[in-house]
Length: 149
Image 1 (tube, rainbow, N blue to C red):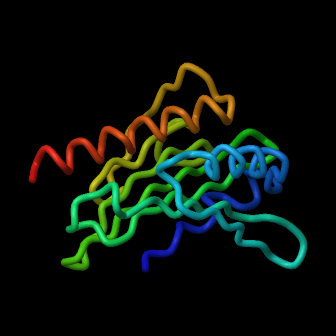
Image 2: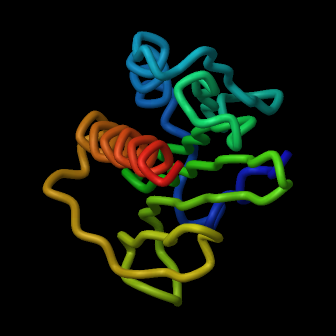
């Protein structure tokens, strides 16, 4: 299973925002696409929110799909979407906001490998707006997968 990326810049993003992670967990756990949510923690705090997506909503070629979310008290975040396919291939992308040297603070790691990066504009950086943007993109991805069958 592919691991989520490390904190993009752990010393510049600030500590994890527990309140926002819990808010996002409540929304994920009530979404029909999400079958399970878990938190990865260290001995002190929540570090990562993981949402396992319903594989039954995908064509058989997708064996696992998940969303890994990090949110920081600075308003920085990383939302990583990953599909694992029967042939062992990964299809992934990531919405990021953090200080970096490769793009603007707000940027997108394009699928299928999340290695190509482009600047990103979002209408709002509110966590629920970012969540809505990401879930809409995932729903569109599922539609694309089915239409290509």
